[in-house]
Image (cartoon, rainbow over all chains, first blue to last red; front, side, top):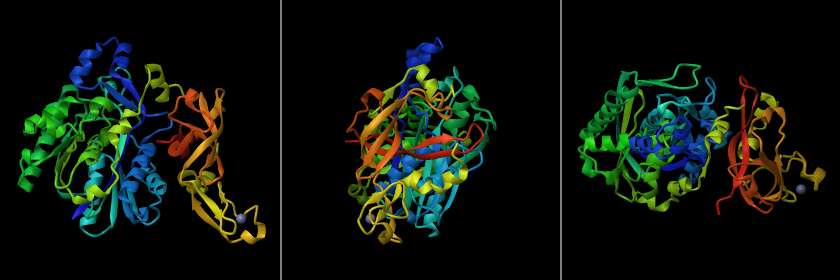
Length: 341
Length: 135
Ligand SMILES: [Zn+2]
């Protein structure tokens, strides 16, 4: 059965605090922070984009798996901020991890769940014996219009998972819930997204995640208390806690995956970086539920059981990586975003 | 501007630090060489691809405050001469480090970054830069 054989995550080193952004727009930082449960967000360096972050995460995943990268026969990069409109990110990653030329590769796009859509494809290809290993990546360097509510959370980061057989965590099942819901979008050529304001909550995030999670648990014959960890998409720090409560999960189950308050919303990276943080601490026989969410809208849910092999690999130390950070002011943030070039 | 064809030819060295090793005397070269200057004719056909580990030490560095036009808006930044653990030398930018903290003897590791772009409509060129090594 398809299994995670390696994982890696990368989040840029720069951070900007909610206070620093709020100060510029004359807003009250404390109420924004407590409303969103976000304190700071990651900011990519001037020379970082979805390709470079994906490569960093992919290289870490190959190292943790300890496999010959030539065995990776499929690479999917999910993002809503691919550097090119036409020219795949996946080929850059494939070359940078020396998996070329005998593999299939493609970029995926489905707002924040494009990475988990790639993960489902890798699972299917492995389970059908079409490939030995597949790599799914979710990365974004999301931007928000200056002054927009999303500016406090739009962040950068990514994670890569290698799927094969008999790895560190067996993927027991996956199911998706998908509808046409215009809660968030970005038109071709437009630098910043548009969104439906309050419409992004109930009919979008909560409806899709709860439906996908319930369907998965019904298929697996499980209930919330059967899981040691729950990982939900994190557009802010509040939504994952609320959806956990709605589904009957305890705070304790989401605490290891909840990174948004300190790195912001990494969009396609969000649930996958959360899962990577869980892989850092998971023990054999523990069970994990992961539910992503992508606007537009859909959720992919996964039921995962950690195996004994987890003890034989070098953990990534994602929380330690996040500790090594540097704060920037709003002017530097604008410079890093390339507003002056 | 570097041109798409030249960049494409250099992808193995730019992305993965693939140099060459002379299998006669064992010297490692980066960028790759077809002939070893020590062994001359004896090394013909005996140069093998060799992947550098990516770790090295800063031997010298300079802070660029007045950049060439294609790097305008990105200064100040540091360019360093790095002695790689394999013995060869590379020049590269140091990133994710306060400029005041960069010093001779600092251990660095290669990372993957955007190096340049051909204007707003052209291609992006990726490759190695260096950051402070994790102890
Ligand atoms: Zn020689």
